[in-house]
Image 1: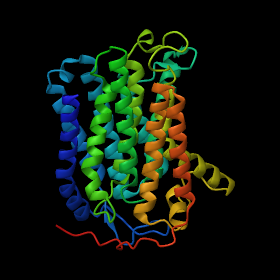
Image 2: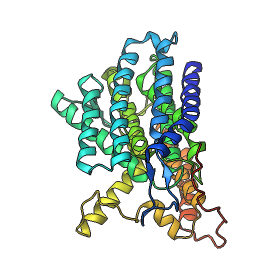
Image 3: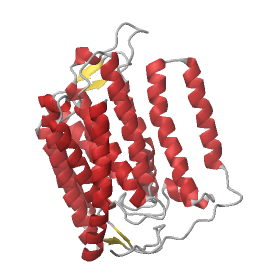
Length: 377
């Protein structure tokens, strides 16, 4: 655990320190978020937050490779190295999009290329766990499902990146939930604590925490596509690498009613972590298809826009989505681990509270300072 904590602190510190430099470069090169009709910010804000997070994650993985425990596991260092290479590729694609506003098809090609890097080098979904059995995947099916999942997660995080600090916090919560699951899995099943899934997840938590002070309302910089696609890729590969780290006998539950971790949790948890972004993607696809538009044509009907229209403040809307993300992610873990009616009832009560808060219309909207212009230097 101490090595994981060090990895998280390195990622957070590296991201936080490099963010200022990336912000200045974005201003110098004109990589700024212009104000559009569908946007919430009112002045241009510099991008390149994704570059800062990439530097923090790279520093964390490099440090991990030199640590006595994490660095002594060849599979972990091998997989983490190729995940980092894919992260560099997708971040470069994002930077180019932030600078030149590339078409959706070009970005999709970049996402598939990054997914191909991890798949070719062995980081792919090997099996699908179900409640009663586990299905092994052949090579073609494994590659197809892995690439699809990575591209889906990459775009899902991009969809939810609409308010200051929203995507950063939601991904941090989800990554912490997945790290918790990975660590408990290895501990309860008496497996090696060093896993690629846990390493990627904890480095992602650190990068998000390091960037959040720069991205909190009113944001001084945005992550841009370089950041949203990077976060989606890292979340996806963290979940995918779990099925490659362990063989089938190691993760199968025991007899009916026994075992600590149900076999379906590795499949359900990634969906739970990305529940809000994935829901936003499905709703956007449905909404735009019905309207006769392409699914990638942006609008102002996302979940966070709906909360703002109900009268929630900027920070209030972000806090509500944080609450839902934590409730779904950690709720699934708590129910899956304990399978206790008491835990289920507790999660249900919290869900009711979250629904009431979400549907409420605040009478006295908190006064918030308008988005301040990005400072130079």
